[in-house]
Image (cartoon, rainbow, N blue to C red; front, side, top):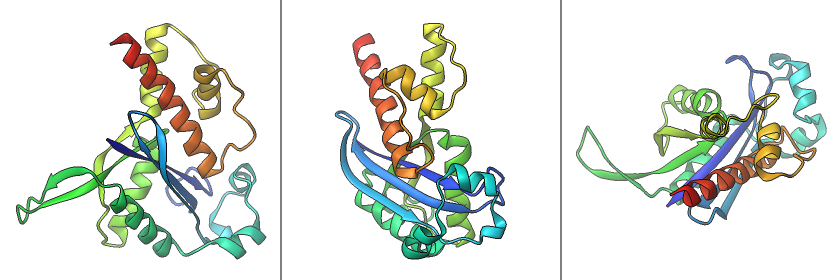
Length: 198
């Protein structure tokens, strides 16, 4: 069973703020072994972004000018990535024909990254080859913390990562690929606990 863990970095938290980076890692869920990696910086209008958010995301104008691609291209390439890791069988309501989609997972992805991804594809009238239900590691971690009776200072990814892995979060936070790897590490810890409990 494969999951595609993904993350956006954005130019702010409002729906009108632009997506500036998209990264994903496909993993084998049993082993949490990385199978494939995706990362794109996305061109955007700096005027539409919150300057404080850009600082937090380590935005570099020179780097984006050199590496960023348009939003349509970035998402088309991401769709191709998802198709490579699509192993969930679905049946078309319209035609009755079978097709396959990928499983998505992320940190705070059910309420933030997932809706942004769906909004982009629906806005372009393009098919998103992913299951509509996004697995959210934030919610999984919140349940586990509740069961343990543990209280953290906050539920930021770095804080949760440090609690479950016992390692410092490092200084790569708010880089999409770094955050995906941190999310996978938390999911691995949660999964190992679930297996032991079973």
